[in-house]
Image (cartoon, rainbow, N blue to C red):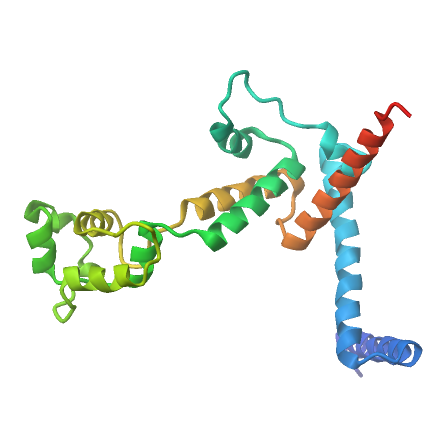
Length: 236
């Protein structure tokens, strides 16, 4: 006797083939275009489900109404402090989605002395550290940094600086400080740390993980609501 799960899987495969055949016959498009269309349809269905979860959790009729639940900022707060305050205190998934998108861009485009050293400095000779830094701190440095066959630290930095990632040079003291504070390849971008915190808070508020396509949907819905409000305020 055929297993129930096998029958179910076979039925799904057959239904999928039928849907694909209907699509190809009706549209004249390619199989690749069908799969792109099917993915989009599935994504829209999933977004509708997530909207329902969010609305039930927050207690609103539509996600667009999140625009009316903006977090009150403390009086006199500096603009530079607003993002950190919202990450910690906002209970509005729309605000967190905005911040997440901004941080995502920051992570992708982050360039600093630390990020460059994290990528290009993989190890040095211990005697180089002792020559350019404080030998008393060598015991506190991760042993993963020590490589007997490594090039000289000054030569490594000269090569890194020649690539002109920054408008300023990375100095020996910059490298020594970085080595003392980090393990090779283990430095974490501050924007990534903040982004992970936003993701955690978003899931706590909504019960589901944040996704780029859902962020795009959420921002679009709230933008439309904002435009409707602006139209209502027009004097004509």
